[in-house]
Image (cartoon, rainbow, N blue to C red):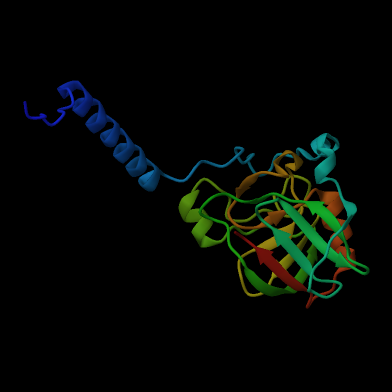
Length: 205
């Protein structure tokens, strides 16, 4: 009697095919899924939330840390993944500041220099931001409710800045259109530590 080839039941083939279709659909969904929303809703401009600075988590408070880098003392390094800004200090140390960063689709990396500094700057949203958010004011005077906060460091010829905020609860979040925000006390501290011309390295992985 000849050996007959084993034939798997029809139900097995159906299950295998169903599994392959599921995997294919999952991969397709992952490939074309829209970017995730901001990790926190952006508070409206003009509202002063600076009293919430006391709620800042300990890890996002300004503090000296061990930090080894090839960049010289005085360099500002922003790590968008970790949500920290480092001001390089001597002896493998840095001052670490908690920051809010750009939401997905608005994060970037590169090397520039501080081109200008301002205390309690006015805010003029760039045209790209107005196009995305037409309800924003076209101009706002400096003050506690201004999204630019108490101080701003302008990054090269870009539209991006390192600045304070009227919403300290957004530190550690990805909510901005590409700027880096600190609580006002930290923005003032950094403002007085670095001159125009300071090197800024934005690390984005």
